[in-house]
Amino acid sequence: MSATIRGSTNHRPGAPDSSEPFTFMGCPLPIEDLSLRARNGDLPAPVKGSFPADGTPTVFDRALTAAARGLSRRRSRHVLVTGPKGVGKTTLVRELARQSALGRWPSLATRRFLLIECGNVPPEESRATLAAVLRFFIGQEDQDFVLCFDGIGALLRSAGGVTNNA
Image (tube, rainbow, N blue to C red; front, side):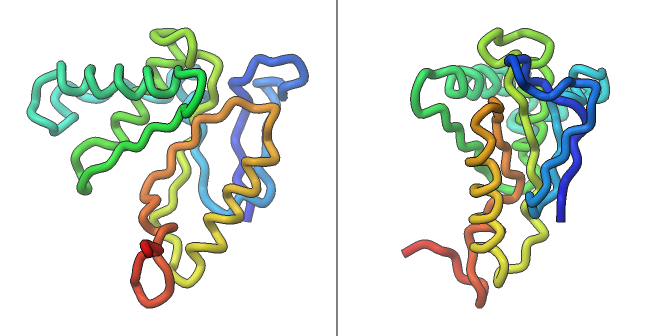
């Protein structure tokens, strides 16, 4: 399986032209380029009150700012957004990509936010799929990706329905 993403949001010399299709051959999961969608105006702002934490916009903004700060560090640029279904994790990631593409956080403006849908991976294929995704992106050192795994729990379980926890 391959995923096709139109364009590139990376502006380094030698990076693919943003007007050309860019194909991720060998990536076994669906990928959505949130940065490109935001730059094209195809990623709308969340509807007021759509972040169900407690209805106050300050909670959402604090979460966005914390994630942006984490991704802007020089080292250990990893952010984990967890919570039960329906609390707004994907909305947070989409809004982070949208605001980054619009320049709210200059250190993230040229990063390419990719939303990778993991929820439909059968347990018996989870380890192999996770390994394939990681192998694919390790070979992409010339890009500056922010990988957003939606439903990553599906990649962390094994056959029989148990998780990979020791």
